Image (cartoon, rainbow, N blue to C red; front, side):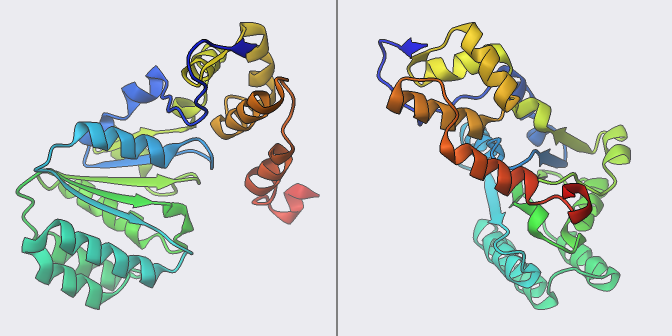
Length: 258
């Protein structure tokens, strides 16, 4: 492995062809789930895709779940909804007053309010870190909206965990898109291409080693990249063990750990 002639840039963005070919489903289906463990670049990929795909007339409602508090999330969502669709501001206030749709009564009421919204332009509703919501009410609401397929509305849930809703039946009906881990994980040749984007010439033999150690996990590959730039040696970064502990081992049940 060696430094390429181009300037070293560890912050360079790289998206493989499988991922680039998968993301357009976001604009083709009323509802899409983007699902992969932490550190695969889900949020960044969706954000960059929308940045290039949307026009100035499109509406974007992007809300990240912070801390797992459903009520806080719902208020944030309603504010973002009102800002993106000021003509529906009164409905956004009614949704906020209704509260998070954590039971069938509120879920139906939220649906009745949203069905009154006219989406004159293409509108994207993005819920980032959906896995932090303990109550699946928002997911169920997304499925109801997908079945009714309002014109110009597209909803995306970004999550680390497996989506537990009616994925199979919605996919069969062509109402739901899905972008999973397999679209994000890098192959050996893609690892070479990623490092090249960052200014590193990587022999395929070293790519094989990195793939065996990381299974194409972009966060781990990034840590190896920083280590190499610093020391010129392909060696395991100290931070990798902490990353694995936090994102792979810690979420497991006690029975599985034992």
